[in-house]
Image (cartoon, rainbow, N blue to C red; front, side, top):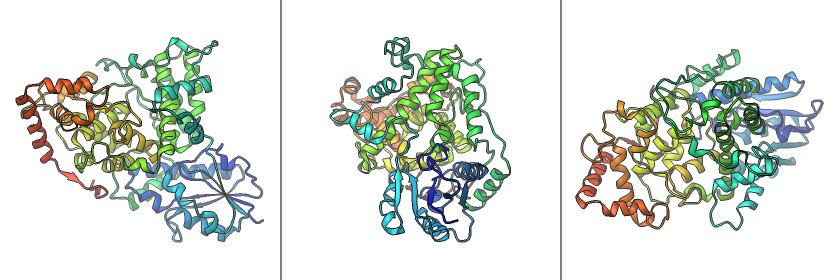
Length: 521
């Protein structure tokens, strides 16, 4: 029977409730999934990320076939694979002769732009549907943003709470009397508190085949492929999330910002890669954690903190991305020009905080948000690394990274490269912050108490060098005025010594130009 509708599902759209599948007719339609070289290599994605997505795609295809759906699946090693979405859709049209193509809107600007002329190129009607897996559409975000002098996540988050009813009492007020319990979520990890591990899934035959493929085809990509423990089906992802709710959510709030030596996941959910690929439904996870609070399984500060990450931050960065692209990707408020230090790829540095963050990222394709923001992001900000190089790195190394979520978090939050569109001030910090939130500093060869000299923590002199060289811009920021005044009150000799140390330290760093890294491990 001829195919009525060809339904293209992208690798981060692995949701049975996807809009492009909502009116699927198993008797007349065909679903197309494709593994393409272009998507696997536009940056050198972490090996685990590629393996995760290819395996999850193959499992999703098998689940559809189990429902009796006709699936056309093109693997990477198919000798006729054209290597691109456009090429594979053309080949599928030639094979099946569909009357039309239906696809859910892509999550990334470059892919959406690539589809702009598909209808003319392909010779059949092309319907691009809205992605209904989010709480807020780009159009609704644009309506919320219109006329506002500044865009702040906190106010957007409150509006989303009101719209969805999550953690809202019968009178329409926030449960617990506050919108945000972030002040309660800044405890350092006690040394005697055990940390449960995340749920780890053993590779099945499909995943094992993918692991062999990735090892053979992507040897120079960043990161460790083994051990591979990600969930690759919706059922496995739901089990991993439920394990978080039962075992780690109760302590998630208190230690959300904590850092600990040898601990890669602490009490975090580690489900962002599943949410962003479509294996988990954000509506369902928010409802589950709210139920955990209402049933006495977890405290309010933990539940509110988690819902804020999903309903607040995740939705806000997506809305901001689509509102500001494509110009947003060019932001460089501080005119940072330095190449990325090589230790971002190798983890080989005497700074324990950075060595831990990068080494754990190499191993797991994961680091929690404080490692990303206040360790790797903070160092890049202080050192003046070019935003393009930093954005490339974050897009490469994390399994949950897609440009819509990575770019605003890096350009807007970590680097303040958008000049304040996202955040009200730069998230710049000295070694004091890392010392307060972690046990890293006592293991480090640098002295976090010292601001200059051979043994001084580099974060300390780099922090004041950052303030000094950007003083003209920072003194105009109301939230940075006191810091700038503190710099001005310092003795000139002290400032000169710190800036000299910063110059010497940065000059000896080995760096890698954007796009040039190849993994030799």
